Length: 286
Image (cartoon, rainbow, N blue to C red; front, side, top):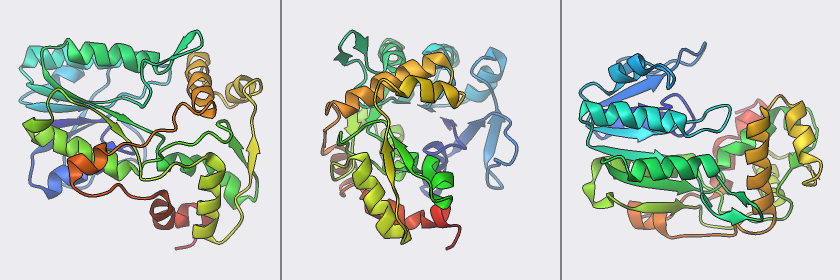
């Protein structure tokens, strides 16, 4: 049995689908969320990272865990809680979803500081481990959908900083390979798409896909904290976001790797293809 945390989310749902399609037993760990259900027949366990009893139920009879945590306020505590119950239950391996640039110093700050602590915990857990560090998700553009449908500009916190934007389905495919093949044990993979794109580049490719303009408006680093706080983001999450976006704006995420191609024996998907598949989200029309 393979436990997939975050199973109803952007990457986790693709991990579940791929595991099912390849005949592996998989259990979806979810929190109760109205309107977000798993397909019929899926082994589902309702659990919360802050409820140890529920985590123990989730890891019962599990061999491997796909560890994806997305706390509202950045913290390694959720990763550590799951690792503790997994180790006690005899789980043998873990694949941790982290983020590109984790642990790098940027001025006086550390990029992905909470991921860095969680990665250290994974390596020290006693479990066989693989760590995945994906670049910017193509699906982050879905946050623009309301603005685009309303003809409004989308905010650009990363300026002209280029990134190796990656399709979440490729992240999931690498995760499944790591969960099912011991050849990936002890590896840290930096996962990118096939080309470097700035946010305006993404907007241009998305505009081509949907047949309408996508306008961006630059949000200078000095203005970003106030805008993010006004959106309702918790202060600690704002701090982490500001560090990460300033790091990318400064060109430090101008990174392409061959890791997706090496693991999957095929090239990663292009952002343009992702945009075409998701055009309905931005137009309301198939």
